[in-house]
Image (tube, rainbow over all chains, first blue to last red; front, side, top):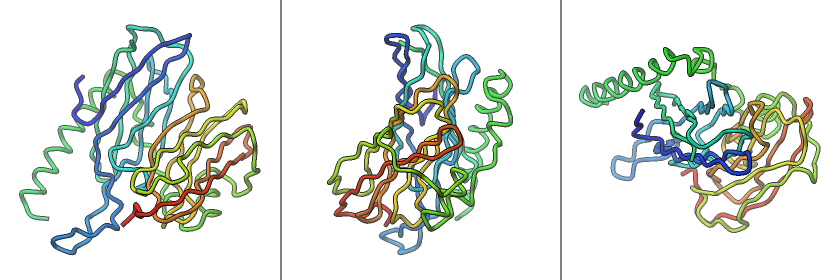
Length: 105
Length: 157
């Protein structure tokens, strides 16, 4: 499943898999003013991120608007082998969402 | 928002919904995870204590040397501050990251699946020079570590 917003990589080493994800997202807090119009830019930020491996939730996260723009996330889980698949998805406060999968290398 | 923008958003949303729908159909995501209510009270809280209480279940966190928090001391640009949290504690349930002086201190809470190792890296925004606090929940108790950072350009403008 190709995803436009998530770049997902996973590498297995010594019985552990390290997941790295870069999500393309503006993460607007709703407090920033547009330089030209002077109006507040409406908030748009990811609220939920989850990652699963073989249908099992490895990590679920709840985020607020203070996560930086284009969030980069990295974590490690035990198990996982090259050739297996992991999934990641996110959902933001406007109802937008995306998901991606990657093969562990 | 003009009609064009709305239509674009609608299209985007329905496309995205399709992808998630497929994932749900394939049994990869249970509807519960997708629709789980976001903890609004915790993320809207404007004090550290309230954010901790709502987000992690208690505002009593013990400082612990077993929690490691890595942040650059002078990140300058508060819009992108890399934060890495790890711990040697066992039975970790969740990891929270907070920034003391942000308008809403809670940045994020990571809930660990049983496979996940208690370490996570993320980038956060810091509105002004303040302490970054990592809170680890293990055995229903909270353990924390804090590091001050100095930013020249605030990240929440």
